[in-house]
Image (cartoon, rainbow, N blue to C red):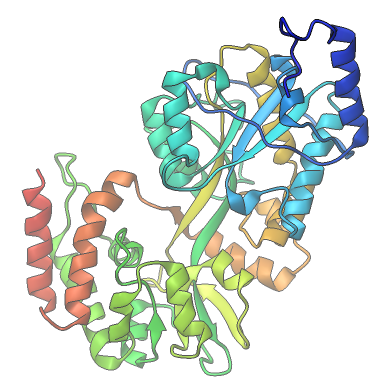
Length: 444
């Protein structure tokens, strides 16, 4: 059924249309889904200060077509943030979005859930719609770090004025600037994050290892995704050992001596049983959690959210081991981004909504319910579970944003092959390092 009048429906007047809209609003169901994508970045945007409290609205598709475009805020987000989800985090986000509507009369927040990868995903839809239907752009989009980088480089999201969300504010964790800036320009607001952690069975591992050397020497089975094509664990070892990924000419490179050192740790760990042979079959951190939950390993490296949302008896989390005494870990995250729009009003409303979602009180409740690391120190400090908060703070202070996509694609696949060969004892540390460097050089 269409609401807008046509030649066959002359009786549907504008008064009836408004009445129908009011009926739906007063019925107060729940947030509906809408449609949208992105365009080319132009000038930086500014955010206004805002605070508020909650009510409820439901707008079916046929009614959204009749709403003034300037008052319809379509947002795209991933399934794990779905406000219709029955989890506490889902309910909190739903209430927050409805609250924003209540303090902005006439504004309707239209939620569209999209996959994280594949055809029709957040980035795929954003890229496609920016060129074929810019009028259907969402006002706000949640993007994971990797996709955020691609969107910024393609020019399909707005840069943000540095004075709008000053990331030099000491309340932000240090990694947030790395996460939100592309080539020195800020393109998003760090909404939430997820660091790599070491999970261990406290009943069997009294003191979690602080270095990778300890891990390989102790010989206690640790599950990690050796077949991860991004090679985040070998990369974290390499960088924490002081290795550089860029040479003096600005090209991607690997340093031979540093690479030999971390290769030796992996090789020794395979010999001691610290890195089981079956790790070569694990390609994601979620997969690496399974052997730990089944008791086949006493330790596991995974995302904090995986460990905290899938509790295992006697399991605790600790900072990721490092090569040196200086702690080091990678953190992934989600950013609030602003696709281009032909309307002057929608960006302003979108910025107000983003500010509203970054409210410290909401962030504290939502992040703790979702078991995700907040991007600001004060928010984490306000968590009710102070033990968890304290552990995550230690981890967050030493965290760094996952490397740029070029590094993950070009270096990641090479280190993945190297790691598999070392675990299978098919090469020694020096041979593996030399082969990896030859492969990097062959890419130029």
